[in-house]
Image 1 (cartoon, rainbow over the protein chains, first blue to last red):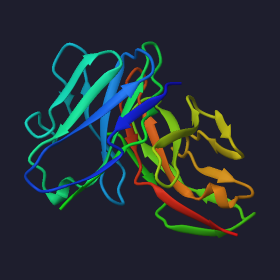
Image 2: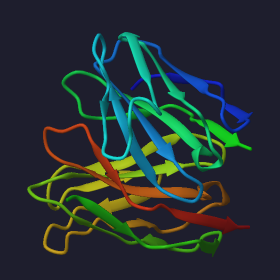
Image 3: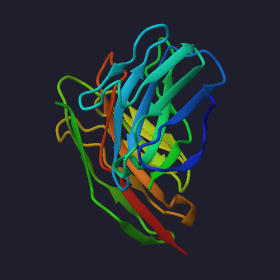
Image 4: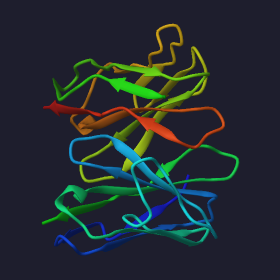
Length: 114
Length: 112
């Protein structure tokens, strides 16, 4: 397994601003992912965070709106840019180790945009 | 594409009642199937999994059997407790792929 922490755990932001969410893992992992969970809905994969290269985004998500960094094998950030109330969601990071497809999830960041 | 359909909630039960949450899937090949649980205010935790047909995953009194003939992976628990109150997600993952496809989630509330 893996111990994953996210910061902040929750935030309330004004529309038009940006928020950067951090994901820290207790050991090196191959794969890191970012998900969005809109209120009352299921999880949707935003992107795969690639170490040393640009993230791989899923359909409907773009880098300008959700820039992602992954400077090393234990850390990643997701920025939600130019926020609107529709961005109010829980954002979760998950990780998987090389050779295993099991994903472990962080506790999530609850974002409210007013 | 891949998809997961699970029973809509919310589901409200009394303690010691029997719980079933239906889950069916559409996917090519032989995906792995999962149940994740999200307790109030927390992230997702893997509850159980099955990687091939007829496998039974089990954990914390919960069970689910991978039924390829009916493309189902229903979650069951014989006697629920208040602490089982949570949102339950069914998910699938294709072989040799990291991507998870989730169902909509089922909110379960267990009353004392």
